Image (cartoon, rainbow, N blue to C red; front, side, top):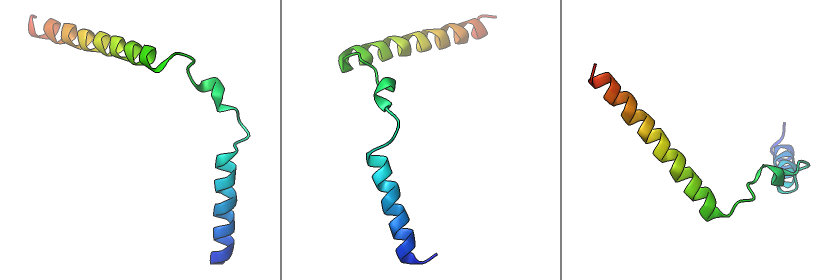
Length: 61
């Protein structure tokens, strides 16, 4: 494959990335960024609590 053909194919691929055929908006949350961040921190707190409880259970046996 020649260098010119490779560049043309790469360019065509780039255009497809700019205008994809799939609607990705359905995967994006409708929540505000601050609500999403608050939810993530709440989940992080749950994970930390779960880990601390598991560690405490191991060390108190």
